Image (cartoon, rainbow, N blue to C red; front, side):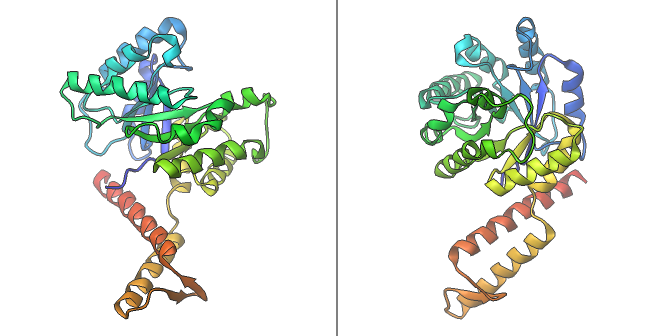
Length: 302
């Protein structure tokens, strides 16, 4: 089954009203909702966030609703294990580990999660880990981080912390070429580990053109999805990270032409003046599987 994770929407864990709104989203729902215990939660409200999100994850839910992810506090705060314990359960898809810089940080969290799943009577390995790469050190070691644990399913790019590390201006405009090395490093590392990748948030949710521009650039680099901070960003992200009708039609033509060639004992074909070989066929079939998963979800939600 293809895991649809094009859009991930941040939701502050201490805001009951925002939790309720996120859970009530209908057709415009993101593929994943990330309840936050970290940067968006003031220090004196972190216990409240843990309590509210723990209760929210116990609610009955639709079988094909958004995946639930929780961003816990970093291990350096001393809160991470208790954060994880509060949310582990059958409705949790994954835990986002912030500010990861070393492979052992992921491996340690994975070992804790092994114990928590056993305590909760859950299948071993069912809850995913996602590593947020947010610093120069993290980007430097991201290839090793991407292969640090079988539980690791994805990488997320934390652009604002990374920009602070580099000493970039507070206000930045344009196509963000200053971040291309970090973005490409994450995407390449994710390919090594067969992980999904979520790109940075576009911080001005009122800037529709900027959101689309950023999403198009993210997809062009190779990210599989993008983060959001407001429901209005979700539809744009889902559209950009879904195959267009033209891409689906081309992928289908490639697959059909290759099937006819194989039936005739030929290993490659000409299509539209181009040679089509196995790698192109593989990509075409990936597009078709992803498109079919999107259409199936739409049908189930109709």
